[in-house]
Image 1 (cartoon, rainbow, N blue to C red):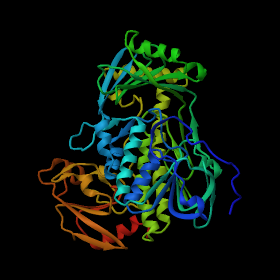
Image 2: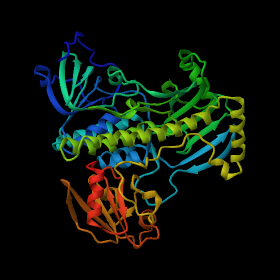
Image 3: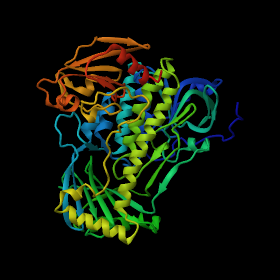
Image 4: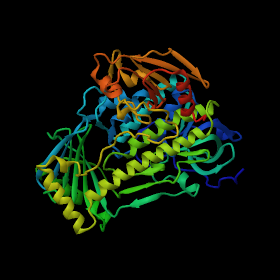
Length: 545
């Protein structure tokens, strides 16, 4: 047992809140000997709330601790990807996100005052969700919390405690001990498993003496959210060396409530306090929009690019997710979106471990797969940052030559990098991947996320749900398979007359059988059903081999 905490109290609210959602209430745990919880999540941001919702919907008791009483002000993350929406749909939260968010698939790239080209992030038909929505992070978090409240009412074992700040973490052999401070003083709580979702500065990471590896880029970017009535289309507009001279690059995006996100690249050697002065910010915005445009400054911030991650995301019984585990530059929208994919990867594995249906080493696959995803995001983010902010005269000359070519030569557009936008990760080389049938399409190989498609009763991903599924295309198989303590249900489909299913899952093959994981990634696939092969692939996906 660690020594008592000396700090007498903490303020009831540390920041201005956009939404007060979980006001402080004294817990019975504060009057008892340290109580053990199966899972404690630290941090009620988007990743922590998504983790709690995912676990709670599966019947896993989860306690969320946060040092505030709700969601802070400021739009922060705004671009939420198709894959994040698909995951939130499985969790029951995507409907209001899509209704409130600004839907977009198109983007335009400019150099100076010249339009170089435009692009479509989802030219393929047959998907339930768009490539992206723009939605301020407070709304995204609130919709997750609204869904938590709904499932709590239906019996989901989720508890959120506001104004509960973790002061110390002590890993044990079979649990983690946490010292928590509240307005009524300290108490202790224990967790079989602790999920750290406490953000880029992660106090938990610091308490455990863990660091980040990677790069910090010598550049600063100003965010200015402005409220205005404008007839710009709902597209992503990016300028290299903009003609309005407000920065070395600029970005314009529409958000809900007539709010527009504007990013200006400022350079490295700046006076941050001076650059955040409203008059200075307005001068940049006026130069971009024109002095006659009326607007209101809603929120401003300055950030620095960082592309870094922890060496390992699992540290014994402490598991890191989201910005606490990895950081990337905002260009490409890979921060919150990759964090949602962390949750999607982790929670089904943690449930199986807690229930004794899989060994703890299944959680090592979370570390391996999501480190793979983080490295992919960091690589793309680093390349984007190097292209947007060339570090030498020669690299800038090359960058601008590519931009000039892109205006007329389509091949050059693949080299232009204003931020490779977030796509789901394929876990190539994962220890959980089973056999592959090579005559099937490469996009749905083992490790890949299942692409959505229209089916008879709606959409494929909704039909898959969140358990192990044997998805068959014009192939015979049992309706239910029970193996290794897991029930695998069959989803029988035909590709006849369905071009999307044919192209995405069969190609030229007449039939196929796919084993799908609970996170809707492909575990294995065959040309026909073979019970021995399916059972072996399931054992592999459970880390039983």
